[in-house]
Length: 122
Image 1 (spheres, rainbow, N blue to C red):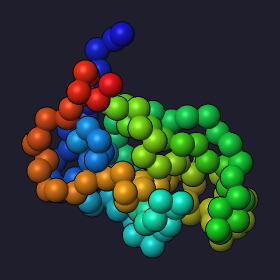
Image 2: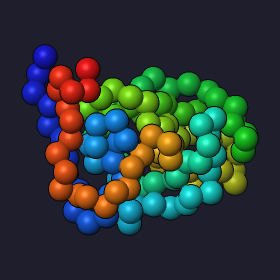
Image 3: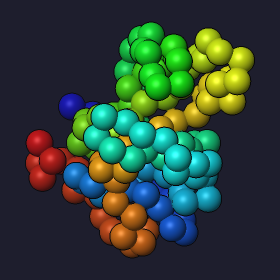
């Protein structure tokens, strides 16, 4: 297995609840008005330390979208999805944006804590 390189963010951050890897800066938050099957979800402009899964068409509450699940690169947990394509004109603003599920995030404000990658997450 290769060496894992993680990006560390400055300022207030949202991190993976499992391994504490940084996922997004608070400044990149667009909206807290989204929902997923596990509860609340947040829309972000950009996220880091994620891997993007295969694209699939999914019927969401706002219509049909092409999305791809996103995984934390440290612990491989699904943390949300990426909007690849929106089929309805009023939903096009979501394309290229990311949803992070609130239940899979922590925002404890400690932007200097070390992620628990490696044997602690496996």
